[in-house]
Length: 499
Image (cartoon, rainbow, N blue to C red; front, side, top):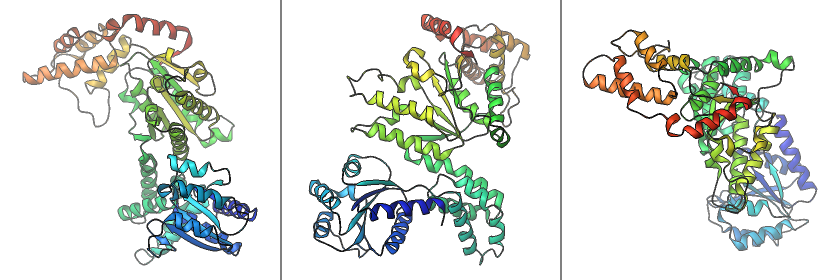
């Protein structure tokens, strides 16, 4: 038995011995939870019964209303454990009252409500009953996942007689790759890997590692995002160099030497200058998976839902570690956090929870946040400890504009990127880019796309004059929002590092 399972069993048994008769067990693993409860029942010589709206009592498949069952249990004196699955989903006012009354007993049957994670109103009502004890079933640890690898290998001997030895050689790596998954999800993804790669150990490890972010992000609060190669980002030389040093800090040798794990960076800058692209490149430089959190997704319509969403999101991110977390448009997500008039203080509480997590997180999660308006960010978000550095992503200079143009013409040496056929020497294009003062990377990319379309429609190669004409026909943001851009650049002059 692994340490994680042993601890869960010990805590549950201790709670029942202490006389608790109402327990909420928060977990997404019904089968594993029931197995642990049955072990506790045997230890305490208490019979274990189950109920669900679909399975009835002890799986008899005969519907039984929850409130009727609770009324019956209210009169029982038998020392038994009743496991109720998803009770909150079908619980009415009478049911809540009956649960409270059962929880007030000092003897007789104990009720364990097994509830999946998430905090809908009904789940909170059960969890917040003062007579009830809340327990969390921790996820399987490394030893338990490794044991499941060995069990799966033993079941494969008919098809692959050497499966036990071959999987034993990578059991540790597979367990490392699967940490953060439920036991069921780990077994499922490992089975899928075996279907594709038989018992080829390295391929199985790569499959599980690649699949885990998508499984954990399935709830919709965070999403997996493809990283962008650093070579596909023009300019930002100082940021790239800074990130390369942080990659060294993620190695086991750096950990052994006492080098602290990098916390992350905040990217502030002019719109269209590559903050989002830089965030994607962070994961590539650090060699870690990338997930994105849009703060707006956290906010829900019921009381407490937003804070619960934040807890769920950070729990998922911790399970993904080591990883890069990209918090997109942080300034919009924390808007309104300084006042409570419009949302009863929800934004302030969400911000407070995010600040606490940023400060106290212990898992290796590198956070890269992007923002357009620095004045919209609260001062406490900017202090050291939450981010290692604040970078300013400015309008590109002449050399950076040339690099950006190289990328969009396919001349930056990126594998798999097709070069654009050009009619003039590269120097002619470079001269146009050098003269495009005040243009952002996004505006340069848009001008290249427009110029290519014109040349393609006329059946010829792209000319430097096409690119120059496309630039001349558009008005850059640095002109449209001159005052705002100038104010942001003044702020960054002494308060942020240039990226």
